[in-house]
Structures are given as structure tokens and as C-alpha cells.
Amino acid sequence: MEKIVALGITLTMLISMLTLTFNIQPAEADGAKYIKPDANVDLFGDKLPTRALDGPKEHSFETVAGDVKPIINPQPGQYANYSHNAYFKNGTVIWHGWWNTSYLDYLDGDLINATHTLVRPISNGTFWLAINKTNRWVPIGTHWWVNSWYSAWIETNITIGSVIKIWKTNGTVIGTAISKVGLYGLEISIDSWMVRFSEPGFPHMNYTGLFDKQSGLLIELTSSWEPHINLTLTSTNVPVGSWISVYTDKSSYSAGDTMHLGLNVTNLSNRAITVCIAVWIETPDLLTYLTLHAHAITLPIGFNYGNPSFQTFVLPSIPPGIYTWHAAFLERATHKILVEDTAQWQFT
Image (cartoon, rainbow, N blue to C red; front, side, top):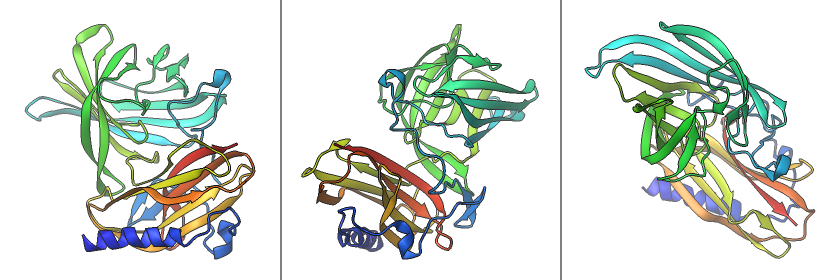
């Protein structure tokens, strides 16, 4: 407990010493320039999703035709792979298979091209589909989800009792659960929404899906009938779980307003991890300024730090536009980005 409190104090002191008036030096100036990662990066001796500072920009704040904002945020190059098994109630396994999705490129504005590969005894093949990120509708493709709602990634602005579109039916958020899955060579605990929905046309045949609260990605899916059909996430480069998160108290500010910058840091794994922790700001003209770099911090098992006023300051007069806070875990030797979160806000 002493170590956890000490780390929280250390992080707060580090950022409190900064003068956040956007007159600080660029991130590269301290010799800690973030470099483009390889396809796979070793984190704590295991592989984790990575993204470079100069990689694809997030779509989460962009508006689209009719000012409709996206409700899911797949990025080109992301993937999610699942085991796909059938078994009886007594645990006897009938067959093993795979159920893998790759997100490719944006076809037209809000439509992202994806492929879905199935390997299982009852059927095999690769299907393609285009997913609209503003409503999860699948308008074209060779997949059975065409002309229905995409079911492997859902919106996150939901709560218990919410009704969402799943496949060709409605799903209901019936609760929350902690999903324990093996990712990155670790056992990861992921806070998830529990969604119940039926097989289209067969209301007595139910599925229960667990979806990551942070990203909305499907973590696990199980059928209610025998033989039970189960999907469980086995590998992905979509950041799942809330390892680190950054947020502001409002989405729009003006000169003289007080901004409360929040930061949460959690170790979701089943062992201690050592990382660098970085926080930086990205300006409307895409310049980046480093505001915190805590080197080689060890997070013990169960570590959980959260402060909605990690930094509080009065905004000066700065150029108008959309700004983005970034917070990330970095690989301690190379400073490659391992896990990252962003918070966008507008200055008017």
C-alpha cells in the first residue's frame, strides 16, 4: 500500500512541477522521442498492442455527415482473434476452431473494410464486410451480417438496461462482469458489459456476450443451448481494458477557464509490470509537447491509481481548435508506445 501511495504522489509531483501554458519544449527535446514500433513489441517479456506517435490519427472526435459521431472506432491494421469451441455442459469438447477479424482500410468516409476468417469443422472460409462506424450497420459484403448490425464491437455509452442493436435483433445490457482472458502472455482482468440477445428468428436461443467497457470490443460470447458455442478473445492489437486513461472535465474551453485533467493508471495483469508513463498534448497543427515522462515505474499487482484532478490549471489564450491529451505506457528501453489513451477537447 505504501508503494501505491508513493507512486501516486510521485506522479502528481512530477506533473505539478510543469508550467502548462503550451510554451514548453516539443517532446523530442528531452531525448525521449517516441519511435515507430515494430509489428510486435515485447512488454514485460510478452507482446502487447503498439501504436507510434506518428501513426494513424484517432477518429473518435471527428464529425461526419449530418454531425453524426462514430460509436465504434476500428482502425486500419487492427485485428481481434478468438478461439471458437463447441462443448457439452459436462465440459466435453466437440470441436475447436478459430474466429478471426481483421480491420483493413476505410472505403468511403465512415465505412471500414474488414475480413472475417472462420476455421471450424462445420464450415470454413473468409468473408468480407464493410462496417459503418457511426451506427455499426453492415451495408455490403459477403458476410451473414450484411444488412444487419455488426455484433463484434459495440458502443460504450451504455449502462445496465440499455437496449442496443445486435445482428438482426435487439440486445439488452443485463449487467457487468470481469472477463479473465489470456492476452499478452498474462491473465488480464477486463471490466465488461454483459449483453443478452437471441438468435434471429429463434427467441429461445440466447447468446450472452461480454464487451470491453473501454473499447466496446467483444471479449467473450457463449450460447445458452447445447452444444454450447463459445468465442474467447485470444489475441488483439485493439487496446482493451483500462490500463491508462486520461480525461478532462469538459469538452470545450475558452481563455480563463479552469481545466481539470484526470489520470487513471491500473495494472490489469496477474504480476508486477515496469513501464515508463508519459503524458503529452497534441495541438491543432499536430505539434506535440511532452508534459510528463516518469521513467521505469513498477506497478505492483492490483495497482489502481485514479485522480480526476491530477492537474488543475487556468487556460491561457491559445490558438482555437481541437487539442488532444495523450497518456501512455512506454517500453522502458525504447520508449515505444505500448498502451495509449486520448482525450480530445476544443478551445474557442
